[in-house]
Image 1 (cartoon, rainbow, N blue to C red):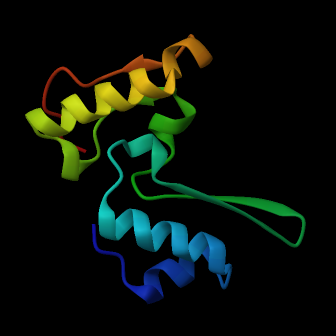
Image 2 (cartoon, rainbow, N blue to C red):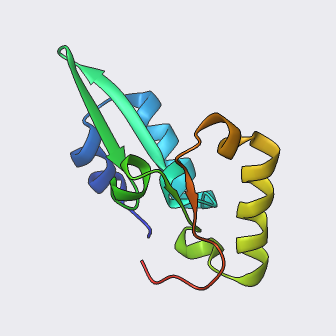
Length: 103
């Protein structure tokens, strides 16, 4: 995805914590599209910034981010979901990791 510092600043303003989250997520690549998010509170308003759009997060869909859309990456996503107990915590959560996705 490779967001520039300017792109990130345009999205979240000068919130240093959110900037660090998105920079790290963009650089390292988070395994799931729904986990690459930053939430900030500015002037009493909550701002949600996502690397891959909000639909997977708000739709309770877990799928690999583009960097992890490989056989090994999809296995990592399944492992993380199991280790973190996501299905038990959020019963409506859907895992879409069985095949390659084009985001």
